[in-house]
Length: 200
Image (cartoon, rainbow, N blue to C red; front, top):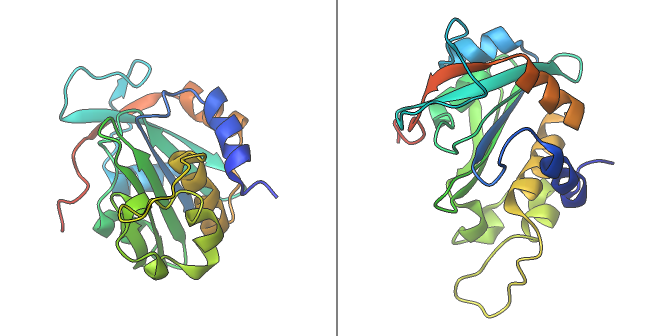
């Protein structure tokens, strides 16, 4: 089973991005073109290696993975999709998951199934009530939950590695380094940044 923090930490260390500022989207039952259209990625506007010198924009790399799913990622941590877009990506019986970290140390995890948002939190490691976290993911969430009113937190596990392990459980898609490299080699395409929260 690859849905472990250790597996994804090793993957992140070989990924084509600085994974401390990053957004990952994993969507089942779709194509890169469909994901790009829903997220607002302009496949006609390619940029060099994901770099855009403008805080209002970022760039995504996308690839088909796992026999009918898509991984998409960008390297700022500020171009993650809104909850409305996440739910739209999951319409028609699909599953869409987002894992994000940015320079402010905000670690997001969220997912939607069949057009409905199941869970989302902008700083999921600090949620007020851990009992509201999806039961099937609690064994992973508990590794990174930081109770700000408590005394014990070892900080041993990386929230992005844990988030990707949780995304694997909800989507059934196990990412590989080869998936990420193939996406990066396929090009980077412009998208708007600062979109998360626009519909909240």
